Image 1 (cartoon, rainbow, N blue to C red):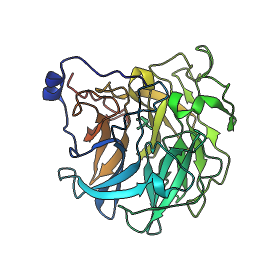
Image 2 (cartoon, protein in one colour):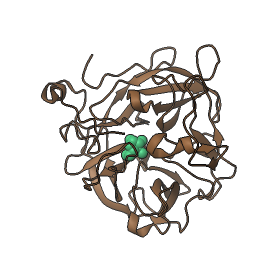
Image 3 (tube, rainbow, N blue to C red):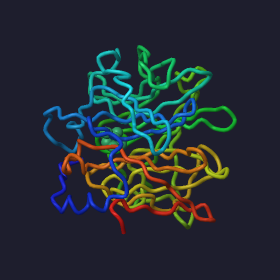
Image 4 (cartoon, rainbow, N blue to C red):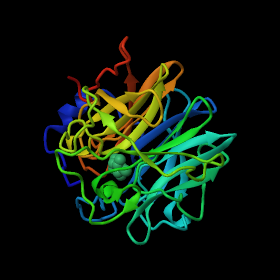
Length: 338
Ligand code: FUB
């Protein structure tokens, strides 16, 4: 994640943008959206200018807290419900509160979030609240067996919950093989299978994994694993899982090629077969999303850096309607028109 502040004609891109920022009084990114209690709740990162120099490790993404936003309908204002959790209140975490997600079970709300421990290693934690907007109280320890970044939780139709997670480069996923960390581990060679996101089923109390995380395989059209060198299609970060007409849709960012893509399968663990692009590149290096259905329509929640003039770590959340064709293919969106 380097400083790729866009220098092209931002005003003309802004004029053609398919949607406007949902929030303008602070910078927000990585929106995870859910319908809880009949309203839309968005759980984004809260971007700040922390004065940390840019580097490929993403240290300039130095976020400290989370705000939750509530919308009563897709056309309504996104209301800032205030600080839901601050890193100073997370006993095991030191810095970099990156992309979160949330889940609801039996009237309680669970905020899942990655952060770095004092030794610089990312883990994923959980905090509990009585309301969708929080405040949330963090568990004293990170989730056992968790690592890397970008948790996304699917509540399946049978009542089971699964967490998907993992991100390359600054997200440290390349350092893990079979759930074991070694700093010397690197991304596979271009002609080797790509690394996949991880999935683990959550415990009944939503606070732990009930199994070691499994690595997900994404297959190409010939049934072969996508290769690490296939940068336009291979997994990088930002997983999201939703179900559409009984099929599991795994969507994700390709990172250095700045695409949101998706793959489909018939169960929560995969394998998944690559299907196509959801969103072509936005202004800013990162692209990160969620997909949520509201009153019978489907929406893509995403972000870009237009509002900050292209500063890659000062982003703004957006939403736009998503469409499927008659075969279940997602119609590709272009954030600034075709
Ligand atoms: O917001 C920090 C990181 O940037 C997220 O964890 C990644 O998915 C990328 O959006």
